[in-house]
Length: 149
Length: 126
Image (cartoon, rainbow over all chains, first blue to last red):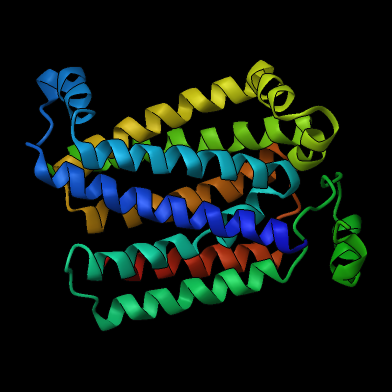
């Protein structure tokens, strides 16, 4: 893991979080989607500018997500990018003027702990062979040994 | 809004995005480090290679289904319920699928992190 790779993870969380908040903002302005006019209503949502900018953010999110997946495990990338949810909470407070309760701050704390923990581990692991003997060996090994260069 | 309908939409988001995650991850692992590929053969080669990967296209389809289910669910239910509920469930399901299909070594550290994030996301919904 070098600085550039951490930057890619940061982009994943920035674009993901912003995209979600923008979509939410857009969908709030629209009528509820009707089951009987599902396709029509969903396509109609694409006419809302907030939804469009949200989708652009999510496309950028998708591109950086693909880059991250090209050198890291899925079970590493998912928690590592979870700080995006924290961003959603913070943006909701300031952009959408929602209340952030004590529960939410506790949630933010837990997510941050999980993220800190997983990013200190190896980003890429060897495919797991059959049997448990190898697992134990992997757990005993210091992490620097299987951290990719 | 009928809770059964809302939770079916959430279930749809979770299934589609977890399947999409796993397929995309599998495609990107087959292609290898995009940074290296780009310095070797340029950005167009990277894009071309990605779009020729079958798992990528299938993953993209799953993600599209997940995305439209999310839009639908967001318009039916509270965003502060829908987003965290689907995200935290997707977390655990994806970790399980990564272990089963991608043979990733999801060790105690990763399970615990996934669990912490999952609980954290649920708390965010309070």
